[in-house]
Amino acid sequence: MSVKRYESNGAVRRARKVRARVKAGGRLRLSIFRSARHVYAQVIDDANGTTLAAASSLEAGVKAGGNRTGAEEVGKLIAERAVKAGISEVAFDRGSFSYHGRVKALAEGARAGGLKF
Image (cartoon, rainbow, N blue to C red; front, side):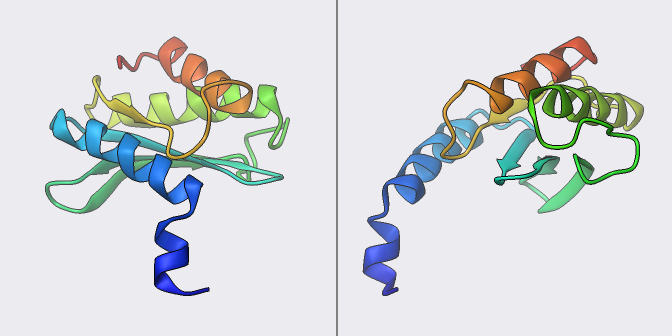
């Protein structure tokens, strides 16, 4: 796939727009990714380019896998790890994914775990 075709892809453009708004806030970023089977979440410090906390549905503690209940468990897990690292406020970066289903469940789980966004 050529670079021009890749950059004009709808998902790439949506993700770029969302990330531009999130990074403009200057807060730490809770970035999520969902594949067909699993859900991943990271708290990222864009100023230093480091990942401060991470969680995924691949971990042994997550029983439900990549479905909605699994996404909610991942949200609670990432919130627990972020709070343990001293992080209480983040900006939610949903990437190119719509805010419903597993993405919404992860966000609600993170809120229930103590993160504010």
